[in-house]
Structures are given as C-alpha cells and as structure tokens.
Image 1 (cartoon, rainbow, N blue to C red):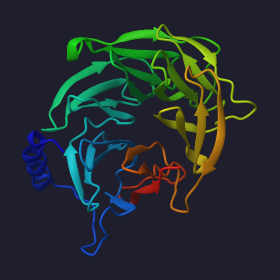
Image 2: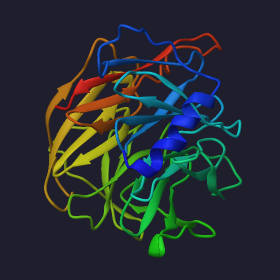
Image 3: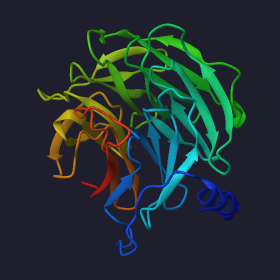
Image 4: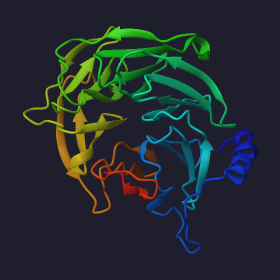
Length: 303
C-alpha cells in the first residue's frame, strides 16, 4: 500500500465501531473471512495493498478487510440503501453502484469520505455493476436497458452521468438482465453478462450490443466478471460456480475452458483478485437475511 494511504486507513480501522470476529490463531492470509452478521455482502474490490472492500446490500456500508489477517471494520457508513458492484481507480477512488437506490457514489479510500454522488434514475432500477476504462466508469442497470457513463476527463469527476440506451441484440425480460461488466481484451468495447438468459454481449461505447459467440455454451445466473489478459472469469451465483473463458482479442468469441466450485460457496456474487487468489463474497441470496445471519467471503486459487 502506498505510504500516503496508511495513516488514514489505520486510524479508520481503530475508530470504526463494527468489526467481524477473527481468531487470534488465524493463519496469514486466511482463505475464509468472517464478515459482520447481517451485512449482506454483494460487491468486492481489492487494493492498493493487501486490502479488500466489501459492499453491503443491507445499508450500503463498505467494510474494509486486511487480507493478511482477515480482520476488518466498517470503513464508510452507507446511506441506508444498497451498495453493489465496486471498482477502485488508480487515484484511490472507490466507485460504488447503488442497486435499488438508483444511484452511484464515489468514495476516497484514504479517508472514507464521499467525493461525489450521482442520481442515475428516478424510477425503478437495479444499478448493479461497474467497469472502469481509461476515459470513464460504466455502470449496468439490471432493470432498465441502459448504461450509465461517468466521463473521467483529466482524472476529474463529472457533474452528472450520461445515460446510454442499450440497443442491438440484447433484449430485457423478467428477472435480472445486464449484470457484470468488464472491458474487452483490446479495450475497444465492453462485455456484459445477462443473468436471466445466460448470454454474453459485446457492447460498443455507443451502447450497440452484439451477442458473443460462446460456441453453444451459456452463463446462466451470470454475475460478476473479471478480465485478466484474454481470460474472462464469470461468477454464476446461484450455481456456486466460477466459469473460466478464453476470449479472442476483440471479445466477439469465447469458449468456456473450465468451471470451478468450492464447498464454501454460498451464492457468491462477484470476485476480485489479489496475488494468485480470487476473493468472493457469499451473498447467500437463498437465505432469508436477518440481523444475525452470518456472512463470509472466501478465497480460492485463481483458476
């Protein structure tokens, strides 16, 4: 972690009032991380340094964990509406999708202070996931066939988001539609998974979608996406599975080369990398949430 972040982060960890239990004898870099009871985790982002940030569907709070010990604390109190997908940019800004709140916000990871908040829509919405490119943050909505774009010119946050309709091959139906999002390997477009159909789409920056050729395969219950080179990882949440796909450079074709699971999975929603691991929060969508419901995040070797 950069030295300029460390004092503020340590002070936040000491001052925060909500922590998850951690055993004193826990091994370094534990592979199971206890999150606060009732937290309802959904999103995760990692870095800089050995830290992970988990978002809460319950009240939108952000929980920060030291991956070396598994210990953590509430880093930023939520607005009372959900927080879902997250990404951290090189300037230490955490972009957070607001789910049914219909909004997005940006948090300084050095201080936990909110830098900006964006009202994306006033009607029913499920603002779900975020991808960062060199020029913008792109946000999906699982209820409305649009992308929300936050232009990031000269590293400055915009005054408002731009609404870009999704056209072409994608059609919205009942249930969750556009969900996870990530750039294509060549950086010229975006990849979006549609949860209810299991289809993957290449979306150009004007919103025109084309279905990716998966050679007869599909990604039902597709949720978070992660791109590394030309390898795409796709969480299939209720299937307790991570699909591993090999893409061509433009993202027009992909093949599922393997699927992995873990007995600790309990409807993981998405993933973030650290070292040779993937960290996945167990959203437990099949479990009725209560204030006492336990939640965990688990780490698996990166397939």
